[in-house]
Length: 195
Image 1: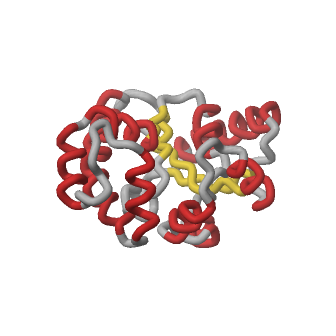
Image 2 (image 1 turned 90 degrees about the vertical axis):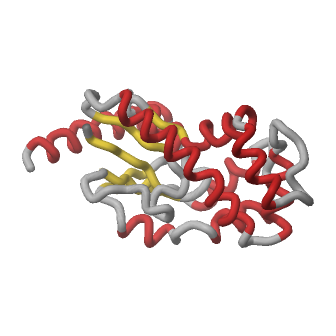
């Protein structure tokens, strides 16, 4: 099984491009949302740590946002509580798809949390900053302060690019991106089979 992960800026289209590979995808953000909605154990751990912010179950996004906005280091603490739950879901996903040729992992802090393995394929999604900012501002819950905090918690784009095996330029054109991903997928399979 080849594990592929896309890295890049927040809003660079990683989730959309991940789907274009036509392979099973693990979407960490979706799993985290499910956790906040359904996992009482996760809620209790977060409430114990942040009783002044986390008050209701299911957990409201605004409560988490306020926690992070109050103190930048709270983001790391939330991560330490949430990541073991997500990792468990990831392990189940990998076990269920172990016979697949390719799986795609859409995990925002894939490099920062040292989830990657030496044999994993990392693709850097290169985008124009103005295109990314334009798309982010169109999001319903856009918050510039929170965005800046999230970006600070990640590697720089240069670091992400340096740790990647391939670079894929996203111009946000659906037809072009489908072709680019098809070519890259074939190249990855070919490169892997020849090693």
